[in-house]
Image 1 (cartoon, rainbow, N blue to C red):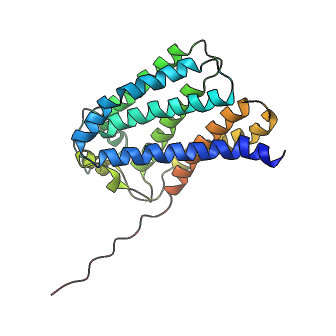
Image 2: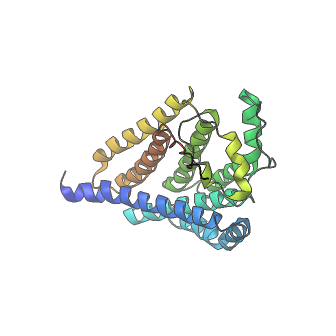
Image 3: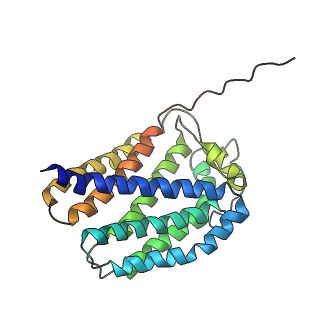
Length: 254
């Protein structure tokens, strides 16, 4: 394997996914910090982008080239970003819009938390079904896999923060969803953490290792894009182990 192969089949897909991930993430944060009204309008104004992303998946469903892989992956990420925006805007959140009762434990706590996300989960499930139906004759499934993995990684991370992790970034919630912080539980990782992070880490490793057998084939690009996505998702899980910075009390003033 030569350096050009490493750059083309490993580094370029990884850098592309990182750039797309960061760009969409910071874009969502910026929009939601503008307020619920702005975020809500952004959901409707971005509907043409959602339609375009679906049309891209249809247009590339038989395109097995490297360019087709990047287009399908980007389309899958755009669809996922739209659903995330719809959730954080509050339009597709859930019927429960109040804090978690302090005494809620176990399944009851999970039930209350699901109520805050129910419409989002339902819309993602319907979206995945739509993608499977639209692309049932496709030559590759990169788009649906991108969306499905993004959803699965997010659900895994949310279950971990529900059951307990050391690092919580509750300040990222927009004001209209601030009540969600009450469902996040600071503390040592739960029993769910180890299997959840192990699955994403091992899947990412397996995909990275499988790329070498496909050098020269655009299938390697598709594998690298999915491996990069899983790597970022696994990294996001591992970062949950980092303790949140302690709050330093302000000095007393006379």
